[in-house]
Every structure is written in C-alpha cells, then in structure tokens.
Image (tube, rainbow, N blue to C red; front, top):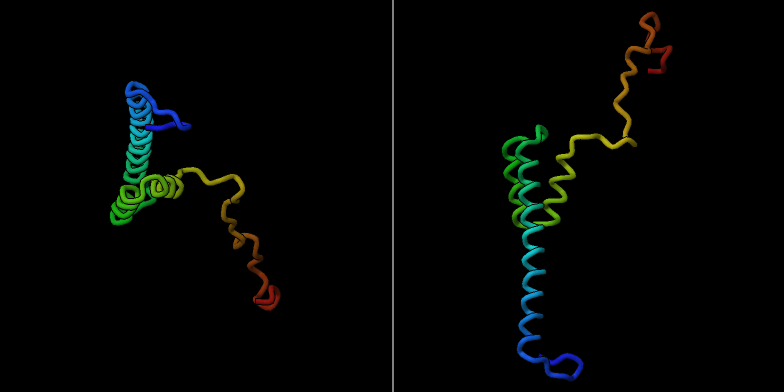
Length: 104
C-alpha cells in the first residue's frame, strides 16, 4: 500500500485494515440495532394492521436506514405540537335557526 508516494510497512498496512474493519463493523452493528428497534416499534404500534406491519418490516430490512427512519416516523406516538386537535363545531350551531340563516 502506498501513501503519499511512500510504501507502508506490513505492520502499518494491517493496522489500517484492522481499524477500517472495526469502523465498518461498528456501522453495521449500529444499523442492525436501529433496524431491530424500528421493527420492534412497528410490531408494538397500535396504528398498523398486520399486513402493514409486515410491509413496514420488509421495508426496514430491504432499505435499512431510510426504511427504519420512515417506520419510526410513522409509528410515533405523540402528535407534534404544531398540529391542533380536531374541532367539533356542531355544538356551536343554534338549533332554532334554519339552513338559510347559515347560508347552507
């Protein structure tokens, strides 16, 4: 292996390969952990039907990082604060008025 025009000794080449191997191993473990967490979240989420759960799990396995992100995003349990809850305006209508009064 040549770095900047100099040949590296065998010991340095092995340490470069070993450190690269550890980095790739760590990335693989992190990805598998994220996938396992996402699959667990999909199967415990009340928002999915069984077919949707299996489809989401397949998406996570075939497209690991992006699929896990999508599954975790859709399986979130809390509504973001910028979304307001639905409002029921039926109780605000006066029952003594007709449709003409409300231009309906």
